[in-house]
Length: 284
Image (cartoon, rainbow, N blue to C red; front, top):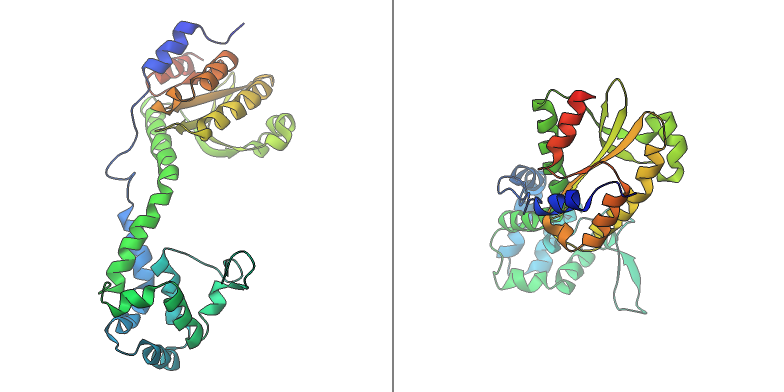
């Protein structure tokens, strides 16, 4: 017997939120961007003289003689890259060229000049396309910050859910590892994980996963399949139940998978139908 009726599934699908993107946080975390730039501002300002130089190779030598290699360690940021020594390999010709660690290239004046030349930054410096490295890196950091949007989508949804629980007077824990609950640890085995929320009542412990999908793709399908495997294991443990709060129009592209999950997992909600779970908890 299915865990939900077709009517309940249709109610879920018809009440999905269009988006959780907020202008104030989702798109750019400017305080973090500003802090990242501040950390390298002094070195960037020092390297600004390269933009004004008529002999960049000589200017590199002058800076290197006075300050060593440290100021040049910020150069990878100019190509939107963060590197750690021994962790970022490049090849001079693919597929059968020489491979080297990019950080090692920045340890000598010759290597630094080669870096600027081969990345074509040298041309941008010479034709004055870049007039301030600080301003340029602020733009780079803004672009790189967009990579964090997937994480921020989850953070926005988790915060919204925490606010709803708090406003409803429901006590909860966040980011709870399954290994802190021996019965779950034994049942899940290699599927051990960290749950977004845990709510404990006098009758039961609810372990809760939360996510939001603004678009389709492979991720919603993968998550739905994973949870349909984990939920029965948890629900088979006396005193425990798995709860999934998920939303977003990305589910329209993954309708078969979310429908299958609805047939298997008794407690699935979106932000609209969540009120059913809140009422259930108050009566538990």
